[in-house]
Image (cartoon, rainbow, N blue to C red; front, side):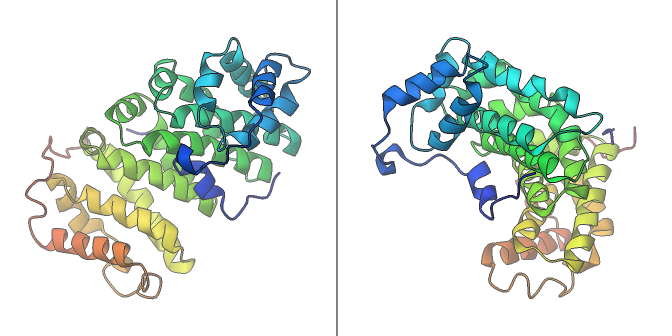
Length: 313
């Protein structure tokens, strides 16, 4: 069973989970000597803060920044030290905006490493994402904590966006699903959106769907949170968030046992015209919702994954 600052930019969602730009489209005006110098300065506590700031600004304009960071002496240790240093500010919740901004710059560099094909695998093997989980456990709604959670989710979002089996296999050995579910229930709209995106990506993998549908407790927890989100979205619509919620439901309906349960517990708001206005210009989500309702009326996708019964344990 699952266990139970700074003002965000309107485009932070895209910055957090978008893939890196193609090197061919990047400006070639970066002074690489400065980049090398900033990386060296990360190892010195006295020069680290400015180096974090400058490198985080350059992470989308230096295509090979991730390997440079990962393979340079002491850099990863310095980034992890930035993370560990603010653990005491988690409880009691005393995190300041300055502390939050500084550690988020370190997290932005870790996201760069997580996004790069040359460093992603060793990033996982080193279990670096686990250092971020204490931030996802926080519940304070102040801006410093919200920004910290959002940026931490962005690192996980960058991992799952690759659709690699290794990523899902790793995440299923951790507590990321219950952490995402808690944020989906009580976070800000942006945090809910990234957390739901992560859950969606886990569900789209066959092993992720099997894991969530393996027991009644796991499935019911996911279904309960998704149901609460639908009720909340009926009051405060968000097409972006609704899109991910519907996609999660659709994927769950690919499992025969989950499909039977959804016939009984799918919120009425997804069956009637509650979201007609919200989906008016969103063809993909309308298509997914139509397919979901069709799956629940019929036998569903014949290619669906079949796993053990959803029996209470």
